[in-house]
Image (tube, rainbow, N blue to C red; front, top):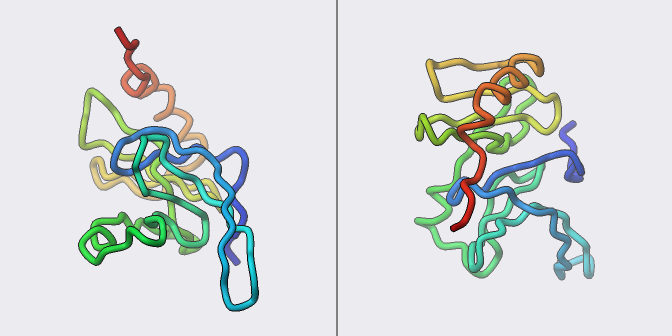
Length: 139
């Protein structure tokens, strides 16, 4: 069964802005009364992109239009079917994407058709791409 609570060690990136998302708690009123939902939210002002481990990427409630929802990534883990999050991008290879499973830690990339990376291989990619994905100093 997939984890439904976001983990404090996840570091998902917004699929639109490639900025690290922050854990956010919000109250929602459903049929059973008010419930507290936890999700990651993009740090870009006015961005409505969210991520949690049960839904994957989604838009905040009132801003869900069909075209925007169709553009949301739906990358799922091949091992357990859990929605993966965008973990790494690269400035040198702008099309590079590393997706990570919050449940088992498996990774998938769109580069060279590589899928099902182990945690060790993800660590190797992290080190190799660290310089490329570091934010540039604001000047």
